[in-house]
Image 1 (cartoon, helix red, strand yellow):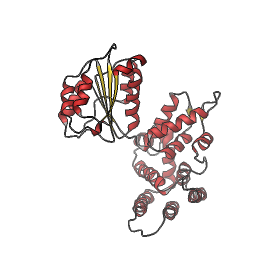
Image 2: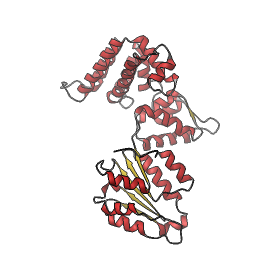
Image 3: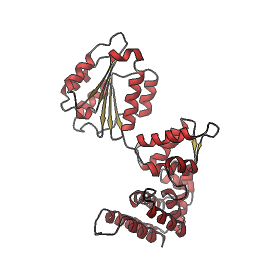
Length: 342
């Protein structure tokens, strides 16, 4: 599936807030958060409250066919500038011929929003995709990568005039993950808990509001491993064994793999003596983010890093039952951490 040119969530929202509505919005992708935000904004702002009864239609793809959607979109608004037709679960519409026919000649007085979640249009339907792009807005809402979560969290809070330190950002990212609907819900809860006089998110706030220990968490375990602090790492692993919700092998493996994979790449940086050079080489957000890789290159040799990456892969396979009849996850974690640190 080729990407829609220059169409982003921010660009769509900028146009909508300026009152510029396209006749068609085809919103698709694995991340439902952005799809919901765009469709909800249109539902709440494209029409005045008194216009919605006669001019706003909500449909579900499993309950209608393409012809019914097209017929609804062709209606004229009643005592309003436009009408809005929102189709939820649009991925369930089986035959799209009638929709494609409508896309070729859409009503200028209709804003048709199709919400296609958990996937995208079949990449073989090139003409169908082109027709949508020519007529309106085609937007793919992609899942954020783990490494993009800190930037999302910082931006979300900054827009609400709330500050956060890097450690707290990573604690939240590690604890919640890439489900943006859940993540923003937790962030909203944190924001509400802050006093008017101090709009800062600290590790103590994260611990209290989200339930992540500020001392025993995946962020601190990673930090202990980076600094080769055997005592601290063993304390955290012991805490995880007694509190499985605080951290598990399945949370920690991707975190460690990502770090050591990047550390291996850092060894090949032409400017590996410079924090700025390593940050640029790894495409990190700031030189500060390269600090752990500078420490890692001092504490681990390139050969050891290669061995660790191999061990992480082996542990991942064993955690899925490969060549491992009965070793529990907590024991696999202890073995892995011991191997890394010794």
